[in-house]
Structures are given as structure tokens and as C-alpha cells.
Length: 418
Image (tube, rainbow, N blue to C red; front, side, top):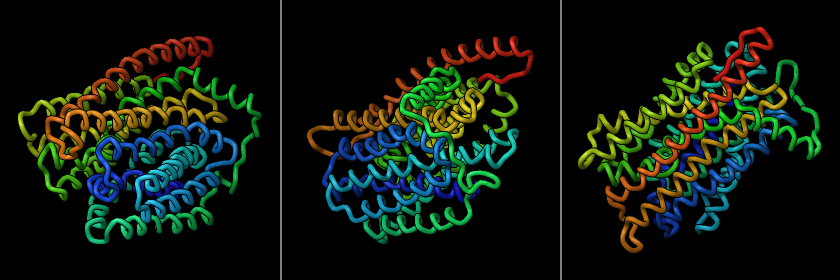
């Protein structure tokens, strides 16, 4: 069950990331600049973030199997449309539906985990869900670079779209919502009850803490993997296309290696989950500072370290879901996860758009020949988001710890916090 679900999520990550190595090709195909190129990812992430709460409610109501299948269908059709798009508006429409289908995968797989695994293994398997699914980003780096160079735009994206129907067949025959339950339906809620449930999820301090953890830790990885990493490494750091694509793949390898470690830490030290997140924010910001402050092009080992640290931010963001899981009842689990999942993608959306704007601002006229200086200015916008996220994590973890301490005293039992 989990393997097929993760395969669908990995395919969604592939489709989400497939534009990262095609950014320079897309500017030529559609005759656009940096700001317009950023709109592709902005729109996709905006749809993704907007869909998180509705998808969470759909999963709570109709189960993972149904919603995951719908997501696979939408992804296949959207990527097919993107393959044949020959104008900027059509391409934007296709990427909008890519974001919609992408939004209907991750929460579904997360919801399957507690149904099929014992509670003690849920933090680890949840981490593996996020990290193993990122293999899709590897396929969107070097292989997609090769496909674009040898097959051309249309055939490369059409080939990618054909993977979806294969996984849909596996979903139909093998995935169940739970042991002995092919479909698991929740209680139908009236609009007023839906609003009440969402408010209860948001006003739970653990949900807000999870949101800010997910806001602060993964956006740098999205920034690099979804759009600006490849142009930054090629233009600002002077790497070849192949080496830049390989370095982008390193972020996924780092995430795969760090995921189990983060899962074990979250399971064994639940009180210090937010401390791990704050440490990761400091580490990512520090390595970026070294790269941006380096006179001239940073050495390859430094760039390799950057990709590794940025990649670990993805597994660190999964801590937010574990905080939300231990803070909400099962009936609200998917909707709370949807709220938390918005955090990282709202941050990524804003950062990606701001980078595009700053690049255009620091580049004379309508030129798309961006300088290393322009990229350094643009990438520095990340510090605003790390600072905001760290302050909010510190603030909300105090609320969670105070609330947990009160509940421990009242219940006379051992409980987890953040």
C-alpha cells in the first residue's frame, strides 16, 4: 500500500520539479523573462497551497484511495497539455492543473501511514514518505535534462505523462484505505461543521507550530529544485549543465539519507522536535551565507555542502507533520496536515516570485542575461523568511509546551510536546 502511494507521490514530485531544468528552454520556447518564468512555479505552488485544506477535508471524507486516484488522473492530463502547449497562456493553464494534481498526493499517502503501520513506526515511515518521494526530483534533474536535449520539449514531457496511467492501474487493484477496508469514508460535514473543524485544527497550538516548522525549513530546497537552482548554478557559479543537474540531484540524496535520522529523532525525542527545526534553519542560512559571501564563484565542495544542507531541510520540514499528528484527533488528521503543508509552499511561492522580481530589477532593460551579482541579491531574500519562521517557531513552541505541561499535570500521564 505504502509503496504504490509513495510511487504516485514521487511522480507528482517529478512533474512539479520538471520545469527546474527546463527554465532556460522555457524562456526561449515561450519568449518570456525571469518574472514570467517565475509565474509558472508561482501559479503551480499557489494552486498547491490553496488546495491543501480542501484536499485534507476530501481525504477525511472520502479516503486516500479515491483522492489519490483523482490526483494521478489530473497529473497525467495536465502534463500532456504542457507537452503540447505552444503559447505562454496555455502553458500556464497546464501548470495550474499540475499543481492541482500534485496537491492531491502527499496528504493521501500520509493518511495511509497510520492505517497500515503501528504507532511507534509512524514518525519514521512518515519521514520516509517525504524523502523517498523526492526520488521524483532526481528523475526531473539529470534524466529530464537529457530528454529535453535529445527528445525535444514535446516528446520529453509526453513521455513523462505516460507514467501516470501505469500507476493508476496499480492504485485501482492494490491500494486500500485500511486493513479490510477498500474504501474508508468519513462523516459528511455540513459547511458550518467544516468551518468549526478547521478552526479547531488551527487553534490547536501544535498545528500552528507545525505550520511554521514547515514554512521555514524546506523553501530553500523548493527554490533550488523547482526553478532557480539550475540557472543559479550555471549562471552565477559557472557550472556546466550536467554538473548543475547532478548537484540538484544531491539535494534529494541528502534528503533520503537524512529522512530516517529525522524520523528516529522525532520518535525518540518528541519534546525537542522544534529544536531540531531551529538548528536546521541556522545551518541552511549559514551555508548560504558562505556561498553568497564568497568572492567570485564558490568552490565545488562548498556548493556540494550547500546542496546537502538544503536537501536536509526537506526531512526537517516533516517534523511539522509529526507535531500536528500528535496534537490533533484522528478525525482531523488530514485537514490539520493540509494546513501544515501550506506553510512550506506559501514560503516557496513567495521566495520564488521575489527572486524573479529581484533578478529583473538588477538586470538592465529587458535582458535575461542575469549576472552573478543579480543572483546574489535575489537569493538573499531568503533571510527574511528564515528570520520570520524562527521567531514564530520559538513563539508557538512555548504555547505548546505550556499546554502540554498543563495536560500532563491534569492527566497524570506522559505526553509529547514539540
